[in-house]
Length: 267
Image (cartoon, rainbow, N blue to C red; front, top):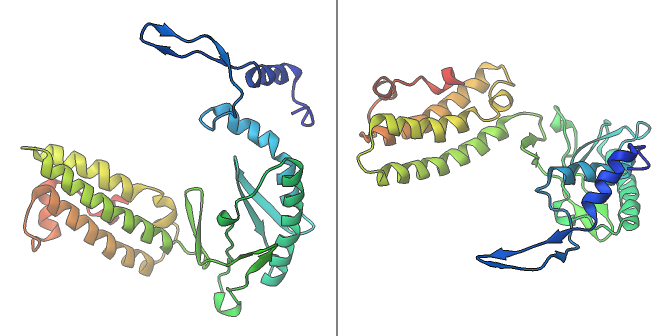
């Protein structure tokens, strides 16, 4: 924080926050004497994430190099390096160079990177022109390229298409459907209004999650057509659960009965 020229007042505040910490445990009428504690700051504290940004700022500088055509995104200890060039082997070579800088920083601060969490993905629109299986070899460790990865809550596909989102939404919907079925089954004498509330809380909220990315991002008729078929199928099963009807009942009848719109109109 001194290196970043933070105000002395804030420096003193952080010092006082980090040192001379004490704890007192009270059980019924018994109160333990105050004891000093020397523990790491939990990630639950909002201040800890801010302090971590100051802590690893030099690491981020190593990842951001205009000369090597690299940039980064960072959220606390989740760091993603983007290398943009036309040749994948060159990108892998640059990554190895950046990684060496990161290793120097880790030795200085006595920190270890989790090798199991290293992920590699190549992005291209014309994937047939390139070898998408180019891997990176580090010291005693090889990172194999993947077809899709998750960065925080965003799913990224190597073709730069958002179809992968639909897959993850579909998996979650199947799980939610089963949970909804159990809730309705064990909610005695539940009214239509209650069941409808369960549907909107569990299913519609998931449909609407990140919709701007996986549904609205590709304004192509075929893209929407395929998605709508899958989504309507899931919606139909959910509506059948709510009013407990035969599987042959048409979707239109279910929607009129429950007074809900088609999922593609909702989205």
